[in-house]
Amino acid sequence: MRVLIIGGTGFIGPAVVAQLVASGHDVTLFHRGKTQADLPEGVQHITGDRRRLRDFSRQFQQLAPEVVLDMFPFTGSDAQEVLGMFKGRARRVVAISSQDVYRAYGRLIGTEPGEPDPLPLSEDAPLRERLYPYRGEQPRPEDDPQRWMDDYDKIPAEQIFLGDPALPGTILRLPMVYGPRDDQHRFFATLKRMDDGRPANLLEEGIARWRWTRGYVENVAAAIALAVTNERAAGRIYNVGEPDTLTMAEWVRTIGELVGWNGQVIVLPKGDMPAHLVNKLNTQQQLITDTSRIRQELSYTELITRVEALRRTIAWERANPPEPLDAAQYDYAAEDAALRRRD
Image 1: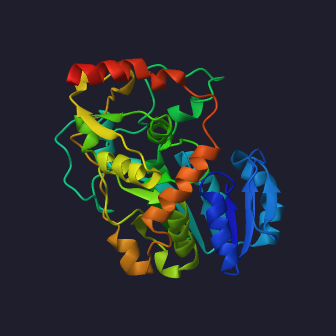
Image 2 (image 1 turned 90 degrees about the horizontal axis):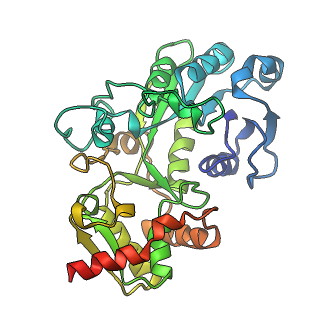
């Protein structure tokens, strides 16, 4: 199968590419050329800006992709560009979305009123009613590197990809993804405290019991590869993620066991937490998704166990700490003071 990937050099893309190539598919990446990635031999590259897809019409016509995988459609206009370019040229398009489309996510971050939505969230769960979840009252300056967040919303992108039968779409709603190359370093702060010999990892009581479905990068990539190569995925939406969801306290304890940490997970009321560890989330709303559809329809299952996934993630985090390190997030004096007040 000829697969064109828009993106593919970031966090998740290289793992998807590796799995598609290993299965014998011809893979071409269309990307800006700004991110280096370790990719298999034989992968072809077209360098360009996704906002100027029409400039590459001749190359795409020669390539004749059967499936287009869009790794980062952030806006409705992104989706419209892809649809306009590949309708009549490809059989299907697979688009990477996020579980932040659910109304439950809006209730978590405080943009949607109401009681917590019931769990687990199926693919038919209510979506956010308020679009553009990261847009503030004042637009970000044009030179702000986070300016793109003002227009970010995957709900319009999903609607466009699923709205034209001439180019059937598949939507994959990804969880909180962890693993090597994670630019958000989701486990680094926990691991650093352990490696620094801290006696405790402090968790606010709401966060300690809070859960959001997660997925290891290679397992998520396997789900994406299945959706790309299985025609049954046409017109479908799939939640992706692990079948069980740990609490934040359970994640910290599991990591501690793997690295031989002898400290404790200490749970405190929000009012007793050091300022740098206080969160603004509505932790009454958890984000636990039902991932049974992709398992039943596409026979998806994890390739890597959670223990092995965490071992690989820990090794990568230790070798690749974030730069620069935000020293304010490691105010150990304030954390020691909170521990003394508890005693």
